[in-house]
Length: 603
Image 1: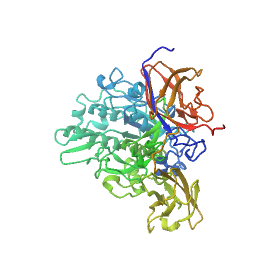
Image 2 (image 1 turned 30 degrees about the vertical axis):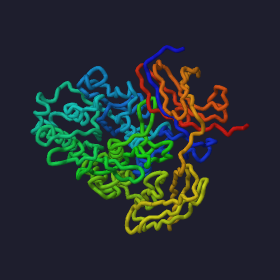
Image 3 (image 1 turned 180 degrees about the horizontal axis):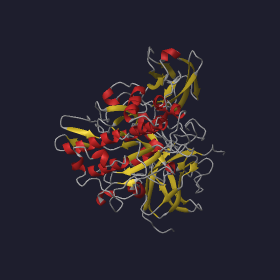
Image 4 (image 1 turned 180 degrees about the vertical axis):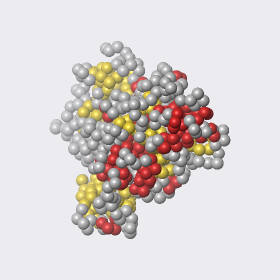
């Protein structure tokens, strides 16, 4: 018996739909479970980075340690290995002790206390991962993995941001001083006593600033606050700092006759809207208006957007990124995530074009984007990192070649057709004259009815649409590869994934046992026997320590859940079993364990 603690570990069991072998077709392409997690540089999970053609940009640069990105958000998990050695000059600007959640007001520690205390996912660590997670083969790489990150906490545990906290964080990020601000008509309203001489200052000003959260401002009642915020944005731009803002996810107009949503509606920021994986288009939740500059991957929680089998991983239509330890990585969505792709790309551009000013960088981003129509939702179009970085470096446009903006076409059970964006970054698709060379299947064959696109004309991009014939397709998760060719002799492979489900998918057995074991010596510390149809598990009163969580069947009744023939799984990190480091008060929630049959029964 171990002493009781106050920590909680909880999650859900996922089944593989009846697979009898870990190498069956229900396994994923890299042989790992449906959780987004650490799989090395630009893993197959990172559809978002392929959607913005990042690999072409990386051929020029992965960023520079001389480039600093400030992230004004909920704070960060400073212990996350994805940021090791690259966090600089962080600061906590949450002034209200009641909102701070860390027992005091402002201080030099930007740690997100929600991350540390409860395990609830917030945007700070996630956006930092998209911008600059290390490309070290141990995790999900960020857009600019060599740049440094300046985490500035402005959002309290109640999800509120005081305006004065935001103003002071902007002054800090740009290391602005009296000479930059004192002549502005709003200066006395913002800083009645002037900028304090003893105010905190960074060792180096940031080159790019991302603000992930918005607020509504009344044009009349908040006129002074609007002038202050717009003035600070303008002062940062004058100082050579680019400010990126998230569009917001409330389905609202950014500006009306009565109000403005700021900073998204600011004329001095780059405002970014999110697009979904399946369509690379925005949805009804996205804020809109003429201030939208660009769009970038933000993902969706709609199972129809899932990258993998939505029965196993309905959340896989989100964007994979860093989350608070001990989970390391997971899926997330929203405009702050979309903005982080643009912020990271700006860091790459600044790394090769240090002399470029904010106006030049914004123009290059807009000029190189892929038109997605509906400018009130998508601005100039979808971010194209390769084109933007080449432009910033003063290099020629990309060579003509077929390029896929995504990793696969996925057709859920209720759809007979789906598309992916096909492009030629160096010219028109008509120049390449693409054609379908062949189709190969894994397992059941012949279910792809057509692979086609509209008249190419002079377009540089077009949707490639796949339709399927389900009439003889058995239930399950099916894969194929459509290989495209060009008259120039180049080829491009397009993975296609199709879910067929006529009958409800039955679980292979009733009841699961979940075990909590000591990660050091393997001692069983606690166990739960789940009833038939129950998939959620929860360990309470867990004392501090290092643990693994395992789950499985016991079909032969020998009290072992990991024998050959049993359905078994663990919480995993890459190829390895995840070790959970539990502290007093920890709440590690949302874990996922996929059960796979270890081997075919031999008797």
